[in-house]
Image 1 (cartoon, rainbow, N blue to C red):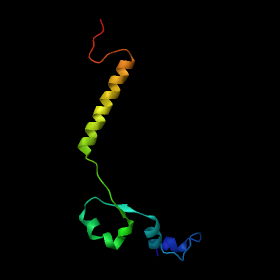
Image 2 (cartoon, rainbow, N blue to C red; image 1 turned 135 degrees about the horizontal axis):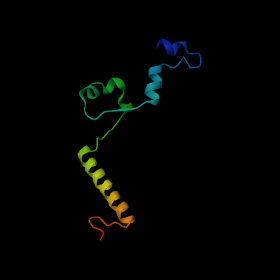
Image 3 (tube, rainbow, N blue to C red; image 1 turned 120 degrees about the horizontal axis):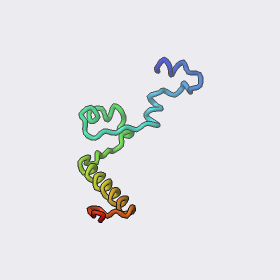
Image 4 (tube, one colour; image 1 turned 60 degrees about the horizontal axis):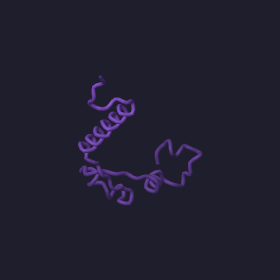
Length: 86
């Protein structure tokens, strides 16, 4: 047990910190070698699946959404996109 854990009077000291971690904590990894090598040491029941959404596609989606919002704001102000007031 860690020193701080064992000195705290408010904590149930009959339960090990590592047992609490395994019961209440989860981790995830995408495909790093350390995660793959240590998945059984950490406990496969405490590992969740993770997906790193394609960042490039996400940035393009955000850019399109931002441009659409900008166009909507301009239209709502009565200024059409690409139109020149005369």
